[in-house]
Image 1: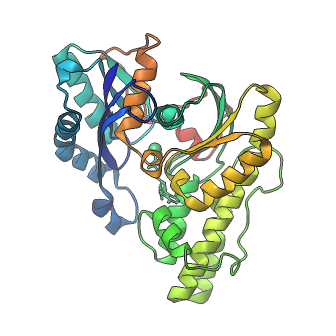
Image 2 (image 1 turned 30 degrees about the horizontal axis):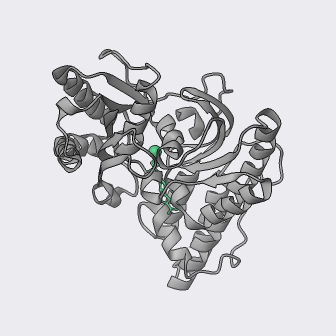
Length: 353
Ligand code: KG4
Ligand code: ZN
């Protein structure tokens, strides 16, 4: 099976061709046209600019993805596009393009949940069976989920306010490190002393698997206001302190989730980290240590497959098509689309997805 995947839910215009061959030889092409330069002057993603940039670039990205894979639309088995959660303008551009191509080529269309695509990336890159525990940490989402099968998720925890990536982005903006904040903080932190600034580890030591990052952001703001101009040393030390605080908060909540996962799914063997923040090396090291202590296998896709990409959308298309699932051309687009419809409502970013 071979599927074209299209991702336009936020600020990456991406398309990929993925097949159902063995692990390691599935991705035939994977193109990402990042919009960071367009959004950088505003310190975050501007939805209207994102939608227009998707419109300008998507056709070309799709054509190059097909050409690099050496396939024509007639050769593929389906067309998958992110249909939510995300920014509606971008979702419309990507999903309407996919629907048009599917109709024109007479191929099935798959409306993909962007969060499910992150969660299933582990099965694109590794041989991993259900159930597994997922830490999904990105710019818009911060959740702990048990992935029991395609379309079957139980949410153990979510953020009460900001997502982890949002915390990185907002802290970077306060420190003056630019956008996107996660990679900028990781780079600056490399030369910094993570113990210089005592920042809070929100909810650490409490029961449950929810997250909170707004207190951390406020603490960083106080430090920046108190000190006025930050020198390069201050910036590096503060970046390292922020990175450590976010990693420790994530690891603490994940430890609670592992305890619950073990109780309810003793057959489960893996802890998976996905989403843009899972590209962070310090976080990957900490989670690998946690998994080892718990006797779980730790899986994190390569960084380029943690951040938004078309391959994860195409792969989710394959996972759904091969169990007989596809969508009509009237499938709706959903700015909010929780993976676990039964999970309790929360005020924070988790509700977005
Ligand atoms: O998954 P993603 O590409 O888009 C969303 O679905 O949100 O995640 C983007 C987020 C941004 O907040 C970015 O700052 C963060 O992931 N991020 C990182 C790193 N790379 C990207 N955070 C920490 N360390 C990184 N290396
Ligand atoms: Zn994402």
